[in-house]
Length: 384
Image 1 (cartoon, rainbow, N blue to C red):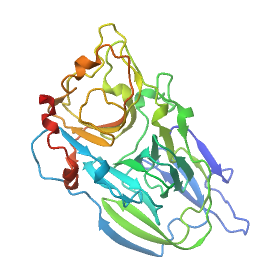
Image 2 (cartoon, helix red, strand yellow; image 1 turned 90 degrees about the vertical axis):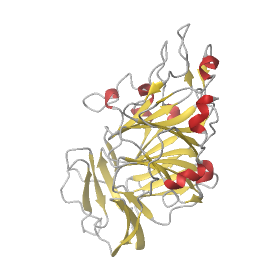
Image 3 (cartoon, rainbow, N blue to C red; image 1 turned 90 degrees about the horizontal axis):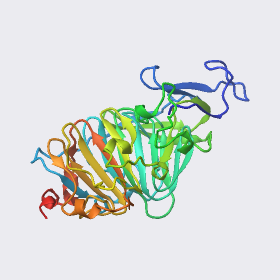
Image 4 (cartoon, rainbow, N blue to C red; image 1 turned 60 degrees about the vertical axis):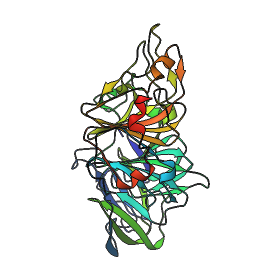
């Protein structure tokens, strides 16, 4: 993120002596992006972060995609797709390409290991449930509607509270940040941005663990999952400062941009990454031109695939969609409102829809397993 944070104990100057009470040194770790030219933080550990006692290759975790089929719009019911599990091993993948993988999970138990994604940043969108994310930068509490942004290489584990829970998981192979057009050259969010720094929550408390014993960190890298065993607790950071850390933005704090006539999808943009954007559709007032048509016009995705994950509410341009539905509208063919939705929207004043949208600028592939929860008639639903 573009603003500075500091937690715990750190020395006055970086790369200088920093001793524990017993006289031994804390171990400094510079964690940065883009080869020391991107954002970074400096962390101080009780133990060297390189000290492992065993490593092993666990598995190939690259999704298996379906064979090329006809070009058409797709609809998947994600609620029956995923069985309860932990927040990482319980992920069920639906779509992906070389830039992003999209999954859902229903975390009903704490992870009994720690995890880091070394391929890129992650966003965990909390559809339902509460709990906490324990990370090397500190602990964050989460609630429904939260986007949990987890930077590449961050060691963490998810501990859900009892009760029903569901995540939409977006794994990238790059960074995730706020849209460039909403930031000045210092990185501060501008006045016309639909949210600001006050809406962003960082780690709430830094819990420093000095326990000894066997602790597993599972690391995803190059599409494979690896196991690294430590003889000390991996969350042993006594202090850190910098610009790189996990943070949370709640979709309810997104202030929609409206106009006299229908505004294009970029007004809903919340995050950007390499070859993709993430957008938030939230309750908002409709267009206020006296002859406005509030529903989206038919539009052609000439260079991007569009994915919509429906959280709740009555999505104004769709029929046959339920909570947890996920649609894929691929590039190369037009899409738009279902029959009757244009006429029904005229004169309406507001919408209560809540959804997360991804636009990817390279084609997505469908994971074979997702076919089991697909609505095969969706591609013909504009004929009704």
